[in-house]
Amino acid sequence: MQRETETERPWLELELEDDFDEELEQEIDDCRLPPELRELLASHKRHSIDRKFYFSELIRLQSELVKLQDWVAHKGLKLVILFEGRDAAGKGGVIKRIAQRVNPRTCRVVALPAPSDREKKQWYFQRYVPHLPAAGEIVLFDRSWYNRAGVERVMEFASDQQVEDFFHDVPDFERMLVRSGIILVKYWFSITDQEQQLRFLMRIHDPIKQWKLSPMDLQSRVRWERYTKAKEEMFERTNIPEAPWYIVEGNDKRRARLNCIAHLLSMIDYQELPHEPIALPERVFNPDYERRVLPSELYVPERY
View 1: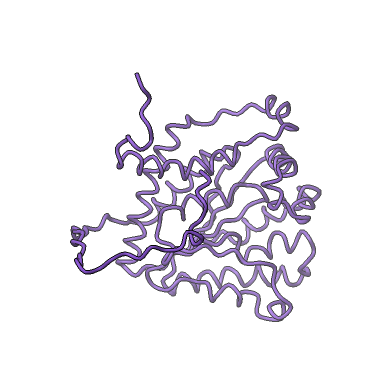
View 2 (view 1 turned 90 degrees about the vertical axis):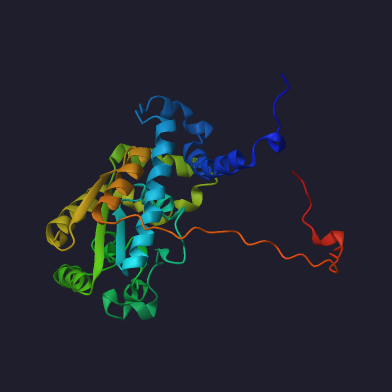
């Protein structure tokens, strides 16, 4: 029997498959194995969930995220989600999956660089405030003001007094955000020492991922225990009823993504909104119009 070509397959089937391919591209990127690590990975036992189940659940949860976003816009809610955790803990992967299929106009990711000289002279929280949402918006902070309790403290970019001032101020700052109507959700992604080591080695030996590994990340390996102590004090002093911490077990990336998104959806009492049916209008044809022939050099060469 002759194999069916791509052009012969139903258009709708190809469109739906393309949606899955977008996620598959990211998943393949996560799982490419540099030759230097094949032996190490072979001895590193993994018991992840079934790939087909993962994809089907992810797409289902992402469709719920679209409904949630509609509800946030409809009700004029203001949603802020903080993603914290050790380097290579999987924060970026979850953020990608949350933002992948929602409207980027009203759901945006904030990942601030190191503060400028001027920002260092400002009130510590000042540079984060402009990125807070207006009514109907969702903001995902890929790291947040908790930099002061983590990397700035451990790497000694902040003095002991600055850290103490932060711990004194942050509960009041977050209570103020909540009183203003912001829904604040804080996630900490937790991985083991061995898992972080493996992920760092993947980045070291993979040219496509080396950009993810900074000198600061390498220092975080050296100061693992100091980060642990800083994290424990952070939980103790900033886990307030108005904005509690939620810990996501991150050793298994697939489970971490699904668990985090499912939990986020459970935090908001949203409903699916009815939508007016959309009818595609008929195209207007002008019998006197003739399409111009454009020069061939304007076109991108068809190499594939």
